Image 1 (tube, rainbow, N blue to C red):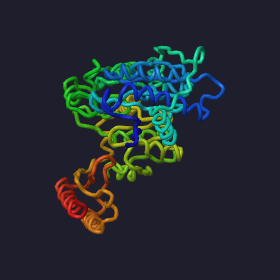
Image 2 (spheres, helix red, strand yellow):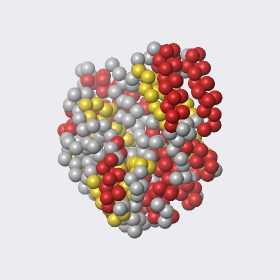
Image 3 (cartoon, helix red, strand yellow):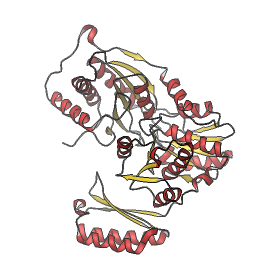
Length: 452
């Protein structure tokens, strides 16, 4: 049986993989593990529970709330709010635990459970492992110790969460957005109300798409994974820029006034320069993953900003930032972490800060994003190979060395075994798209030949 917790909580098809019984059991287990760890010592424990608009979130939320309350935890139900809002409220309200029900950018039938520790930080891997072990032990018959009478948890609807979170977002902006026309695509997700409200309070003229969630349409042809509608809307309305979120709004992509995509690397570059100028880019370092475009690395070098790269995944970016006291990091996918104001990627905050940079400089987003040139990037998945030997195969090593010699300083090669499938990802960047494609195809052939 595989590990329940992945890199971003527990996910699966709701009511098939992720059942009400599993949600309830994990919640009870989380309460017991945190109690044993001393988190609840000396006070009555409190948890914040939120969700995205998926239909399955309704019954899963009920299961989580029931599990926590049955274990003696008081619950604040904040309703439909973004993942970073649940993290923020967990910290600002002094709660012992936060729980978010969402499958992020996944299609509607999926859902997930993510736990936050006190302060709104991601739960440590060791605690996730203990929660899973405790859940499995009790699901096979070991009885729970259950409180009774006044010891059971109480459940309260906390409607103030929306206003508190929006006020926080607007309050940390360095300047207002007056004079900007901005299109927001809420992906029919958790940011459908939050993001337009925050941008409007900050002074922007807001046009919305993807902001009518019905429980079934989350991420459906809209949001950060489908930018076509946003591109068209920005051009149609003559907007200065557009912002797109995913289902739980922990990421943000953008488009400029002409409808051109501005990806996470470009957003990170714009924010890094702005924070350096404001003196808030601690240690003059930005954190990104090894999948960031080479153009981003070259742009940071040219600007005199140091770059630290991590393994793929926003959790690794966050770990590096926290370990070294850094302020800014992110991924090409639009997960951007501004650690002074958020404990996780926050798509609404990212969009607001990007727009604030446009407002304060008076420059169009296209010009600001032009600080970096996105080099052509080709990614080929090579299936049905022994991915465990990708780093040790002499044939693959030789093929990579030859490719690197050909590309020189203006290109890059990355071979990465998939974390979930029997395949190897071959990524090649070069100044010329045809050269990148030719080198990637040769490398893919070499991987197939050596490891197939």
